[in-house]
Structures are given as structure tokens and as C-alpha cells.
Image (tube, rainbow, N blue to C red; front, side):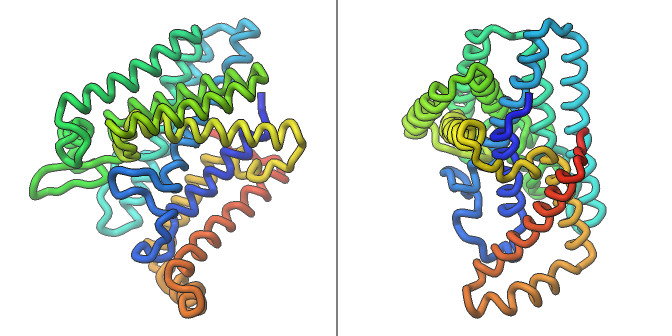
Length: 353
């Protein structure tokens, strides 16, 4: 069951990922295009949670219809596990490419696609074998409250001392995103323990997907408002933190994502607005992986520096400032992949894994 608004929001989210991930000059970036250094939630911090929310929506739309039709559980479970595994392997392959092409960059085991793949597989199994609405809500609450309790009981939410960093230091070590050889401490923003509340975001998306299937869009919107209010209040005790994916962050960003989806559904699927971003959305993983490889090739070959200096910085910085030049590069890079995905869409090319 494909819904134009879901594909559109997914595509716009991927485009936002590329815009945030591909600055021309990382020393000059607008604050709203940067992630919070630790506590807090910037506009850029909403992007990945909204994508994870849509993963849950898509699972519910796809598997819910099959389950209602009486499809056997075992083949669906196998398919969910295999697809999740393929997404994980693709993420690892992209990290291998980065380690090979970017001289001096160490291999990183985890990342965005690995988190998506794991959560896709687990949430898919939940959609198949844990079909009770109450059970799914209970699982969501247990994850959020349990994660909060474990963080609070084991050192809090500050860098290094928090439980997520300690687990990643013990299990990942030099395979983490950041590793200090002198101290042996590691930090992984898509780490092992913090993937648990990311799964909660996907479960929230599954519940949103169920409301969409039932055409209960008003309830979806009000649930988004409620989630943001609860998340905002919770942040007094447990700050928003994308790198730890705190429980308050789950509800704050997930609630906002639910509002975005409800609005997009009303505008696109009900009122007939054009589904801007749909071409990017149907090939979301291909766009992400392609942009990653392109960045590695441009950086590893040394082309990216003169390209940015001559085409973007030299003409734009004197007129509009360094941040604008940096953003213009990211926008142009994103635009190239946007046009490529539009071309693929018009040719009915859909790349899946």
C-alpha cells in the first residue's frame, strides 16, 4: 500500500539529510544545519528521527495489509530479517568504501543504515508477531521508561560517563565513530545501546501507520501534539539528546514527525497537492548510498577542495558570506541527486535491497 504523502515526506527527509551532511566548509555552517553538540535539538536533529518514524509507518502499511489478507507469518518474518540484514550490510560496505577512499579515516562498524536495518528487522517481527495494539504501546512505554531509568542509574547523560558511551567503549572500541587511543574511550552516535530508543521511534511510526490505514488522520495529528507536549515536559528531567536518542527526544521529534505526516497526507492525498519529493522517496536508500559514494570519491580524489573554492567560495563568499557559500555547495550537491532520482522515477527505475 503506497501513499503519495509518505513517499514525499521520505524523499524530503533524505534531501534534508544530504543538505546537512555535505557542507562545503565545515568551519562555516549555519546553526540550523548543524546538529546540537550534545544536549538540545536543532532543526537538523529532526531529520533522522522523522526518517525512522517513516520506517515504522512503511512497515505497518506493507505488513498490515498482508496480515489482514491472512498471509503466513513465517515468509514475512524471513523477508523482514533479510531486508534488515541487507540494509545493515550496505551500511557496513559504505563504511568500508569510506575507509579505503578517505586516507586516514578508520573503519567504523555502525552508522545510519545499520541502525535503520536493525530497527527495520526488529519492528517487522513485532508487526508480525506482536499485533496487539496494547502490546505495542506497552513495548514503546517500556523502552522509553526503561532507557531513562538505566541512564539515570548508571551515571546520567553526560559524555563519556553515560551508559551508552560505556557500552560502546567496551564493545566497539576503535570501531566506533570517535575513539581516543590515549584513554581508550569511544563514542558512537549510532551506538549499540542508543539504538534501543531508536526502535521506539519506529514503533511510534508503526502506530502512526495504523492510524493512516484507518484514515484517522485527526487522531494522528492530536497524537503528535500529545507526544511533543510529553517530550517537552520530560526534557526538564531528561534533556533532548540526539546522540543518546533520549526518551524525551523520541517523543519530541516523533510527535513533530507525526504532525508533518498528518499535514502532508491532508495536503497531498486528500487535497491533491503535488507530492514534492516522491521521486527521491521511492529510491531513498539509493540516493543516500549514492551520495555517500560520491562524497568519498570527490574527497578521496582531491577534487572537492578546488571545486568548492573556485565554483562556490570565490564568487559567493564575498557577496553573501562563508556560511552561504558552504550551504550553496550542499544545496547543489543535493540538487544533483534530486535530479538523478527524478530521472530514475520517470524511467520507472526503483532500486531496492
